[in-house]
Image (cartoon, rainbow, N blue to C red):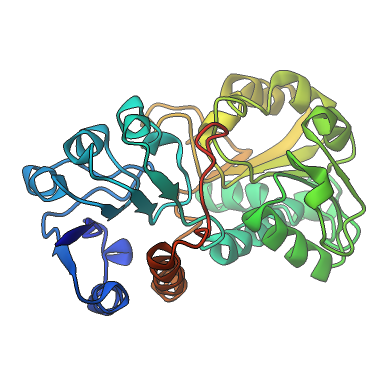
Length: 342
């Protein structure tokens, strides 16, 4: 009998697999399949599941594995039989260990599933920056009525309409961000690895990776939506940050490793940058003594931009569709390019 392992019992309730998802998986595979539901809570953070003794035992002879990424030990346990791994996370970097690559299995992820809530968070972040949110929060913490600073021009406040937004990465999340910005009559530019794939009407300009400095020079708000790969490590470098117009804002719902955090802090301290809103960091949780916590130009959120009560509805549809494709031998949706890392 063929085996599929479901390792989606996240210790975070919002991500824990609901009973209806298990029913969908069992129904989609049908007869001839043993569906093993791992009861041990697993980690849904950082794009990588855990490797408890229960899941290691279940993974032996598994053909299919559903998790939040796949840990190297799990891949090792399933090596020889594993053919397909589906990750309920959007990122893939943590799954692409040498142990996984040795299996020769296909990897699909949940890119695009998180696009709507992340794009909502980005709109919140843009509004926060442009409407003086950093100064308002600082005044609240100090119990200071700061109206004079807003009305004498000391605190920059502008409207969303006409603001120039640069989107780094115009994939599923980047396009959802662009659609919202365009609906609010902002001016949108972007870069992506393959600019010829761009099809979103209304975007002013789309360039390739070599055009990042050009994008930065036109971006009053820079939104980072690219995946974390070996090619995007510290993609937002000091040079990119220095290319932004004076007073620009940086918004990152992607991965902290994409940003040179030291250069970002220097840009904030020097006054070149107007501020930033960060949901992700190079090391998480963010250390208690990190300067981001107390910086008056930084709003920190704890990697929650993707949180949504509608996640499993979209994820269920993806899983059911891909099981049908797998059983029929058709190409899977959201297939990760192992070499590119996303």
